[in-house]
Amino acid sequence: MKDKLNLIYKKLLEEYGFQGWWPLLSLHKNGINPTKTGSMNGYHPKDYSFPRNKNEQFEIIIGTVLTQNTSWTSVEKSLFNLKKLNSISPEKILKISLDEFKNAIKPSGYYNQKAERLKLLAKWFIDREEIPTRDELLKLKGVGPETADSILLYAYKIPSFVIDTYTKRTLIKLKLIDETFSYNEIKKFFEDNLELDFKIFQEFHALLVEHAKRLKSGEKDFLLIFK
DNA sequence: TTCCAGGCAATAC
DNA sequence: GTATTGCATGGA
Image (cartoon, rainbow, N blue to C red; front, side, top):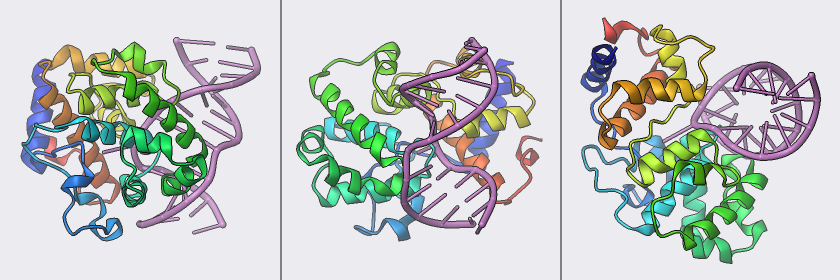
């Protein structure tokens, strides 16, 4: 199974190249125009130095919450709105009013709950110096398994595999799992069969998402590249 | 117009 | 532990 999974990773990498997740606003080109830049901006292929400071780390964390059940282009709009308010830092988010904050993140949907939870998350982050554990993250309101794993993997570079709807769908299509597999079972499947390297975990997860997205747009046969 | 998007918490069984 | 439902905007 190890060989099989590594072969899938290799094929995806050959097909799409390095993905450079998690996207950061400071790496956007063309200034402030998220609708035009779309979701192709902010990535940093083969550069694993991010996040380089606490603000970038925090930007990733709020992104993981904002993107819950929401497309990344919508999250970009919210992040740009926050940037205009000069508010992508935990201190600023705590400082602006709840209404102003809600209005800024409205494009991402569920803005009432996300605003309250992000304020709590900001408070938590300010007091948190060390790397959090997964259980600690799961106790935070608004942080479920996928968000916790995304925070660990992309904000803290801890090899904790992220399972999202795309990942699960891809594995089902490849017949490596079936619909009954739970989040933790799928996570274990990856972590038991891969080298525990945060770079591989980041790329593999991002590649699975990219592949599933292209399938959805009807670009090519889903299983073609694996043959 | 309907459906889905890089889910989560509350509730019910 | 597993199944269901509300949360909400924006694009296809």
